[in-house]
Image 1 (cartoon, rainbow, N blue to C red):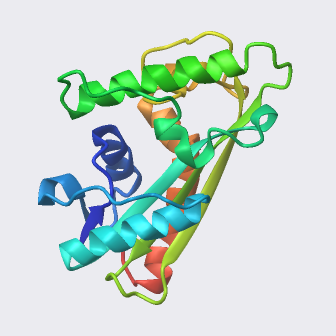
Image 2 (image 1 turned 180 degrees about the vertical axis):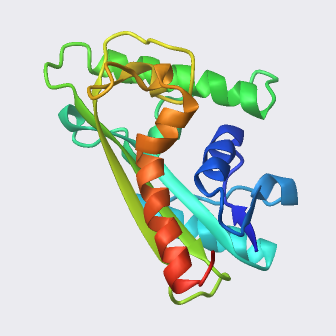
Length: 210
């Protein structure tokens, strides 16, 4: 079964391909099918994930899955939340390709977050991932799975792995930043891993996969 990922984030695709390994699905990015990214106008992860999945399914004429995820910081009332990927304003693309532009955006987002949290004593935060899968664009029974990963916000970046806010988020259970985790460990304990575990169960039970 081909399952179109409603994202052009290459690192997210790699993570989800690993997390869905063993299921009879071929996960491909919407970019590989020349499907443009959908608008994300909503205030919650689940609404945005559903909108992105419907957009991809409609243009791919088949099944699609979307992940809407972000970092929620308690001291900021849940910010950056659904705007995590575009938290900081970034002018133009500087002639960057897609991945170079994403790296610049990640750096700007992280800098803004650390600046806003400079004097905050409450460093509690969590990564949230909501996955929505559809058999087709008009599927009345979307599969919805969510994962929450309880973490703490650091004051300085550490590590070079992962993407997004990973270098500035501390994993208390492992004594390191998310960016210092190896891929296997991250894919076992992350918010996306928790959501994917739920989604795998739903796909087996409802879609009869695997």
